[in-house]
Length: 174
Image 1 (cartoon, helix red, strand yellow):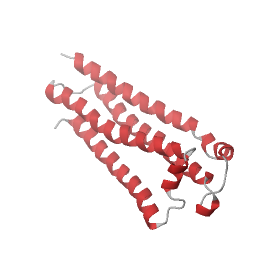
Image 2 (cartoon, one colour):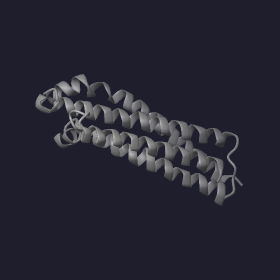
Image 3 (tube, rainbow, N blue to C red):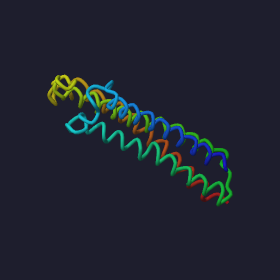
């Protein structure tokens, strides 16, 4: 296996492990009763809980599947076309690997956290919530998240852009 294919496969394995740990925490936390309120209540209530759903599925899609799929691009360039990443293209591949993984975790996990905490705060106290309304949740929890989420999305975008530029450079290389 080529070196960049292997790096992205390992990154996808790590992202998959993190997704498994994250999912296990929410599912076991609900089943065992140590996660109050249960994440299913947060999701079912909608509102701020929507951030949880979008972040979670965004992480699975980009963080796990997207990183694994990216390995196929590197495989094609390195193994099928027989080209070796070196010089500037190698730097772009490193930026791709690091920035893509940091960006996706930062953006989506902040959304997951904000969605859970915000959605939980909107639930009634009888089920473990705080009884807050949407304004209180947005003012006290979600309102501070768009800027850091945007920063992480820019980091993710820079990583993907660097990887794409590296693909083009390697594709055109003779």
